[in-house]
Length: 199
Image 1: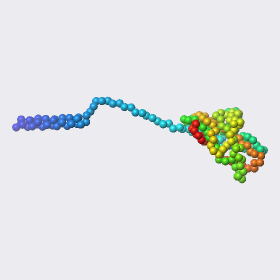
Image 2 (image 1 turned 180 degrees about the vertical axis):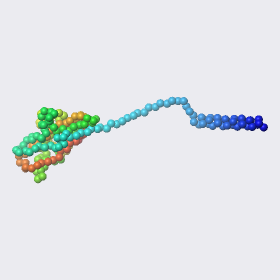
Image 3 (image 1 turned 90 degrees about the vertical axis):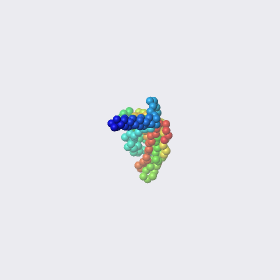
Image 4 (image 1 turned 60 degrees about the horizontal axis):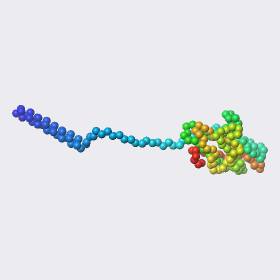
């Protein structure tokens, strides 16, 4: 009787072993494993957007003031900060600056909403208000001889002001002899665009 129990036990162990090996072979056949090592590559990319930041210099931000005109007609009346730079001899203090952290040069455009107009609705025609912009300033730049009349649509005034640099502006006004007395105002707008783009 004891021999029989030992034989049964051996037979049971043998059956468990056969079943285990059968399962192992089934899984190995169903889910083959390979020893291959693979490699691959892919591309990476990025698009950098154009970024630029501009700011009006302090004097331009405060406005373009032609002061009090006492004698008419008056021709080429200088705006108050046209020639008072302490940095550049007789240079202008009207600037628009391009931030050093920009990644593009900037073109500047300018327009006025209307001619200088008084509360009584008298108008100094828009063609009498002129400007010129330059990438440098001294006693002759920006030059009066290159003055351009303001318009009501944006006009490109200066091109390719690089990052960390400034554009320098001068403004002049002609006042006709028959112009009525009064305080005259308008709004002048500036627009920075990526160099080479339209206003």
